[in-house]
Length: 261
Image (cartoon, rainbow, N blue to C red; front, side, top):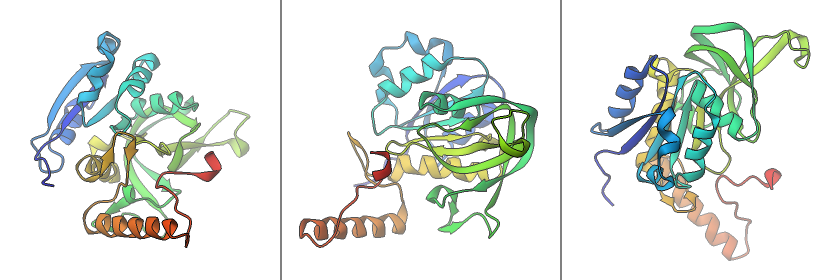
């Protein structure tokens, strides 16, 4: 099947800062020619539920405010296989949707900062190789005063550590969830501003690559990998299914977590 030359993206505008950069990053991603629609967060609840089903991916921008109902409404009404990614405050909205906790930090995190990869994932690869060295550090541009200290149901792929006076955090330190992923849906969060460069840009690109290359059904994604790696992974997946049908092995659907059931 031939790939489309462009995709249909929706950006939920939670603020104006860095918005031009975010639009450019999404619009010019991949082969370019992507259609980008901006929707002010204050107008989200005015839309009919099926409005959000026309988009290949939806991006929650950074910003401020407490518009949880609007973001919950989008997640609840988008197709199950739609890619959704939150940036900065958008990342925090996603965490709150899935039972996470957002706290005000002691100091504003601004500029290039180090984050630690806690779980290997294709999001942290570039040209098939890990972006980080043995220290598992990535450099991302950040600008926020709040952080996700409890990811709720989400899987943490990268984190940072900051000072905290909250007695619930040991040794005066709090772990901040920097990159998160939903366990069964293509929903991601990035605390940094990937539209401002650094490794965050590559992480966002890898998420959006999934919009082009992930084989999807109405129930959700089949796999995330792309290119030759994706083809090899698909072959391996088919072999596992065959062996399972023959009773030779257990087959576990990608994204399924026995511990979560």
